[in-house]
Length: 466
Image 1: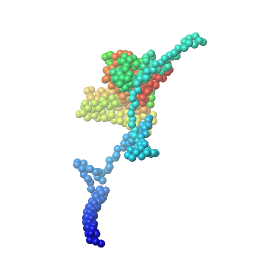
Image 2: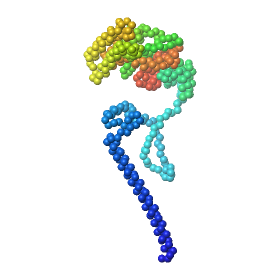
Image 3: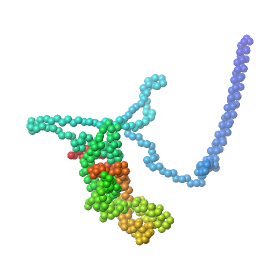
Image 4: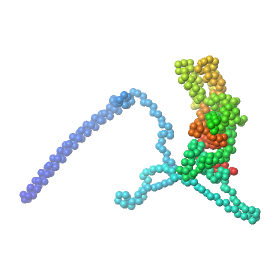
């Protein structure tokens, strides 16, 4: 071995020794870091053990950040079933499958595969333009009968001699009655979405044709109301050509509800007697308006109105303890009656009659307390209790009868909103059209039907029978 090789080996040895020292220093540093991490883990483990045993309570600003062990936990409010589930997917009506035919990175051809994820996109197709169908009728000569044979117009196409089909008629009626759109907004909707331009007179005439064709169906609704065992009645103001009048609503509860509306200039009991007729012998639910006093059958007065008056009475006389005590006693009667009706075990007819007699007796005593007290704040409501004592607790006797008239008020509210928008109608014919169409659409909506499809099916069925 020569001197040059020895020098190279010594240099390599020195380099390896230097690398060894550097690695030893790194190992020592890492050992120190490991020891520090082990100390931190020990501290964290002790902390977790203390928290699990409840020895330490973290405190926030103002209130305790965690509940003490000696405090009973608050019951968790249960979610309603409709809020305790994920959003349901709609049944798909179209499918698109997305996949790579070749790898986007290396361009290798791909085969097979499995579904990795899905996503639904809900959208609407472009609104279709109107379909203009030209019907051509060819006449042909019959040599046997010696006459010309011309086929008639197919049934279910149009209302009368107009050129607008039942689809447009149903859409216009739905926009006008259910969505409460003004005529100009209906024109804008048809022109913007469907490219259909109709004049104001054309829309008004189309609504009139629909109402005229549905007159027998509206009369049938009134007959159904008169044959119902329970009828809710209410009324509200409605102007006609600037002259004040009233809309009367008769509606029924149950799985197949009915709504019948009529407009009259009067608010007297003659209108109610005419609408109910001689066929109705059920229970009438109404407020305390005097026009309903003419009905001689079973009557249930609205407790919502009475409770609202009791609340106003207490608010107007907060310093008089007797007023508050009397109002609470009347309210307690209603609460007890509702608790009896909605008990877990349905009461029998005899139990209902017995409890009804007790309620009427207590109500009679409460009415006598201040009915003759001149100048007392409770006098008016006490006299009301005596006047209608037999009409306050009919819901205890009749199963399924409501104690309030909210059903009629809710179904009359859309017309009240329409009145605020338009101010009423301009002619008797317009009022008749509005009442007829509202009776139909309110009935369909109360039954949970789609108003457009229900109107379309109704007109097609009506024209096919003609």
